[in-house]
Length: 369
Image 1 (cartoon, rainbow, N blue to C red):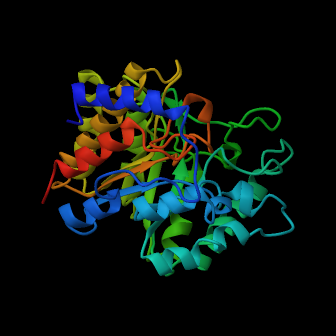
Image 2 (image 1 turned 180 degrees about the horizontal axis):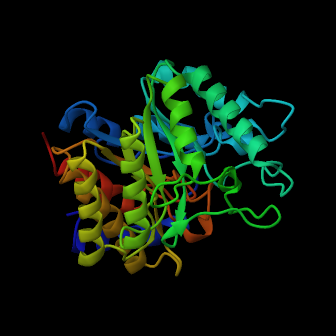
Image 3 (image 1 turned 180 degrees about the vertical axis):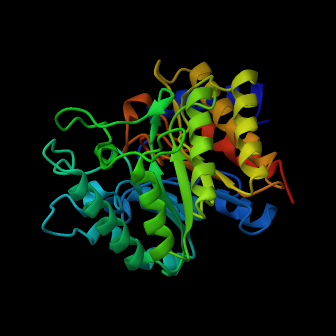
């Protein structure tokens, strides 16, 4: 009932009800089993992770209620990033990151620290006057400190070590000024290997390996699997790190896509990427799942969003027996978060489950170990 024509019926019902529905004291609970309950019942422990992202500021609000109810895996949005923890070079801001320690331990959740070395860093780091030596010192200080602070904490299983290191088939470099999306760490220098790999990538994994032995390391990337030149460079960089006896445990893809992305060609490229990771004993994580509705939320748009979410999840679940797979939606609700104007979430602004939620629920129920 929840695929094919069934998704269209759900989308139509959602459209008719959304304008009249308001949020009560607690977010409404969808029918069926909770997503975390399905994962626990249907899959071998640790083989399938299904999670979501919020910030610490929402832990005690409706997004936190939905997160706790539906997901056993969590990625704090910006709370562990250098731009938050080290916004001031003379002080450390641990409040948002520390806010997760007790809830994760008390509720038995798995947490991925999204603290990668990449373009999301403090404005002062991006200052053009910053020298390579200063950047190297800050990279080492930040990663060593965050690793030592959280290594061994209950539930702290994963960490994004680097992110968005490649763009359009080439290294992601720094730029003039303090542009939001530049990578100043590139100024540290490049190695002498065939690809002239930026030294900051090796340094980040060296530091993480030394100071976070209990954490599994993710090499995260943002571009579509069809971007073959970029993924070739990512794959070669993973091999570069492994040749230097540095541990890479997982490869991540930020699956920010439009509704309707799930063509046979796109899904085949995703499948090839997951297979490549598993053949090398790497986990594969969809780290930031979004399905954008850029044309609104008519019945057919909601149904397309649901199909796309389900197809990406299916590509993972079909391969769960060859290696660990993880799926993390970057949104809990259309009320809060990044680009909510494109309505990317499983829950609407009133915390009502959208057809996409039921598509994810149905796909999880469709498999069983």
